[in-house]
Length: 390
Image (cartoon, rainbow, N blue to C red):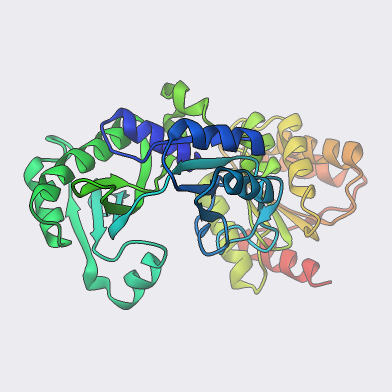
């Protein structure tokens, strides 16, 4: 689950991470009032969407009058911002963040992610922060500093100083880095976050001493931990998510939209991934990942079909079930129910195996409906690709 930049900043601030003064606004008038409230003589108006690359796409503007704050907010709100992460359709801007502009001395990059190899949180930092960090990682990976955190003791002050010195911070900024890095790490652990990214982490000088602050922030969270993170769930913005994925969650389905034309309904994440790989191997492209999970009732299968068919690109549906907890007769009944209730016009390629497989096949054969049956995964994937290609 993702949240907006302003929400991430508020969370980090609660753990002692310094951030610029700012306020969220949903209208031109609110943006002007926000600028007056945060104070200063120059402001930054930032589009709030769940995507990176906003600066290059025109979603971050620096202005120096209150009237320009309102004009900029009015120009942004309600429009679609297209970045390299949104796709060509873009994402609609429904809110903006107005914050005091900072006099930036130097920009750095700071990220914290879970390294699956070590099963530990790892810090990634660089002296080359800002909008082109991806290019830095590709062209000069030696500029990315890494530090692994032992979960038994947490992030130690000496590790923070080690990272700070490695990216070129000096003097008081090194000691400031301890507070910022430990605050970010503690926020990550406390809220079951999968990633904390501060880009840029910047040294600013607003008329006094240099200060290390988080100029931008991104957090995303482990969906499996949300049951104990009610405060985080309350921050969820459903308008920023694919409606199909939101609906799937309400039915206990795991759905992720993709860009292909072969719909997939599978039980088990591993088998779903294998099914997608098999489709790709045969020259096709999956339209989605969908795991119906264990104990899929006929109604659940019907809901799965409906959600998959909401994608207009889908030309056929591959149903691949290896039943253990599930039962093939349930799946078969669900497919027939879906065909009758949803008036499904695209071909369904069905492979059943496991519990009650013979009963399931019998139900399909006696239904009078034209299912394309398959004996194994490879056969099913080949038939799905051939069907999608006409």
